Figure: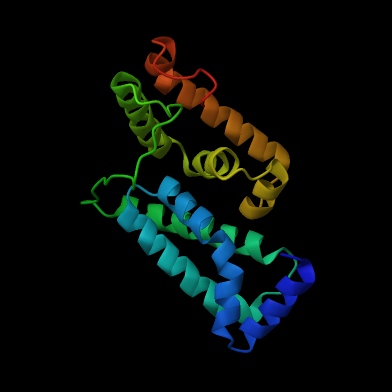
Length: 194
């Protein structure tokens, strides 16, 4: 979306035009939800993070000053809300681990049942391993690897230097590669999938 159109939509939002907010949100909704899923432990938690993030965005629209792009601002809200959610979740003694929505079979588009099963196992192991990463590494990894954000975009979203993003991703890849080694060494996955 051209920057001038975005500014116009933001101004309309700030005056209470909810259709303008929907127009700003719609191109990012699916990616934001995928990110929330990767940063939380279940689709229900991701729904909660998304709902709270949208409420925060609506409340914060009046003070949005366009120092960053509206999309960057939204991605940052989802990351911060997910981080807050995880902190609160850890404090709850009876937290339960859920399932990710629609785990994707990585690296397999064929119909060989063994390949599909192996890819599903790899996907489940990757999702579980992601949840074990420290939150800053998980957020950087999810933004760059799963959402295709550049290091520059990720640094802006997370509010840290590009070098920090690079370090977090390298550390995440190292930990994930170690955890997923049985899948990668047995020919059940692509060594470069992580």
